[in-house]
Length: 138
Image 1 (cartoon, rainbow, N blue to C red):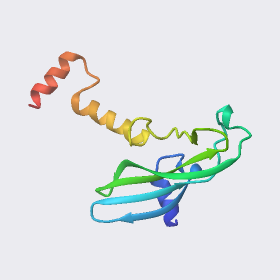
Image 2 (cartoon, rainbow, N blue to C red; image 1 turned 30 degrees about the horizontal axis):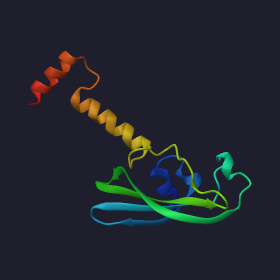
Image 3 (cartoon, helix red, strand yellow; image 1 turned 135 degrees about the horizontal axis):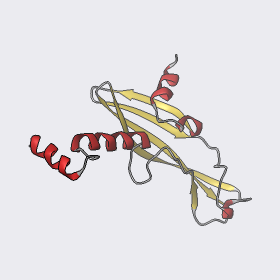
């Protein structure tokens, strides 16, 4: 297995379709993986972009945290692409379903954190059991 295959195996599902692996760094505290969005226009675009010529693309870095690897924080840097079209005042950016829209985490990591919170706080238990759980742990 090559290094890039290993990287894609541990990254959130679906990223490989839209990104290329640019770099991978590791030190005592962190793994940092940098991905660059491919210059491929989204299949589904708002009507005002149809038939227009792309006149510029811009890359903006978006950093997100993911599951720890071997006790190190994992930072994913997504170099997101924005397309500027002739005659359209706004820019176009691809929508990615694997990223949580309001947080800088993958959806898988958000689900993991929610489940961990439920387990630690007794989140799925009736109120009487939650109080018992809290009183035992305080």
